[in-house]
Length: 75
Image (cartoon, rainbow, N blue to C red; front, side, top):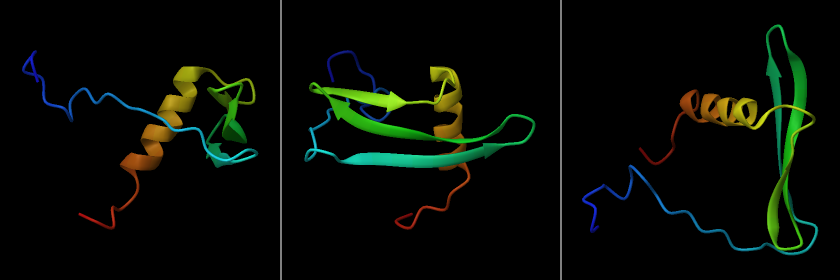
């Protein structure tokens, strides 16, 4: 890369629009907060997240916790 940054350090993500009515749902629970779910879907060509009134930062923390606490099959 021109700027010398590793492509895995700063990936440039791209998304393809899935079939109509396709969604990705994650259920979560957090001690002292409660439980809920995040649903990712497309509307008018934009990736949306129904976050049930939780902040974008909370969604990021939940997704990171999920990845940090899972075992990778391919590693």
